[in-house]
Length: 73
Image (tube, rainbow, N blue to C red):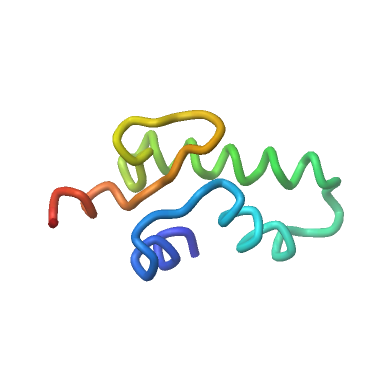
């Protein structure tokens, strides 16, 4: 889902991912647990070199892109 979104739009913020995924995560989790799930998913994908922060920016306001996206431009 994350990769498809990034392939379509190029980059995305954390808020974009929250809108995309929070309502799809089980309601058995609290809102805080859902946000942690998204955080963990993004970090795991970053470690596996599937996605990366745009121009190395991290933290609040960071934008994410597919790992190969910038190399193909």
